[in-house]
Amino acid sequence: MPRKQSEKDVCTTVCVNPVRVKSAKKRIYSEDKLNLMTEVFAAISDNTRVKILLALKEEELCVCDIAAVLGASISLVSHQLRILRGLRMVKYRNEGRMVYYSLFDDHIVELITQAGSHIEE
Image (cartoon, rainbow, N blue to C red):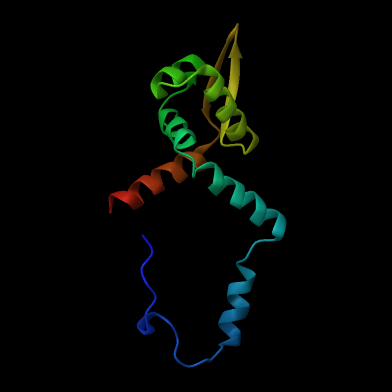
């Protein structure tokens, strides 16, 4: 929950450090990259999608298994997986008539792990 701003957590004198400002500006991504990053954060702001990512953290699962884990319909899970796939957060493979999903790469595993560690502190 956001805290109320007080005089202790804002500058009382305006003094801009041009060296630090220039350095900080270099760390800001281009608008295209910022938009993609915002989409990733939006994707993980949804409980269902986070549950899917957590379920896939250790092993691949088929769509039916994911639906069973979540207690959700296959249609709902498929829709959420489509969003995650579009953001390269999950990938899939076909095996006959089955479709198995897993996390896209170690970056996604790290993102989920770090978020979990952050809330445990």
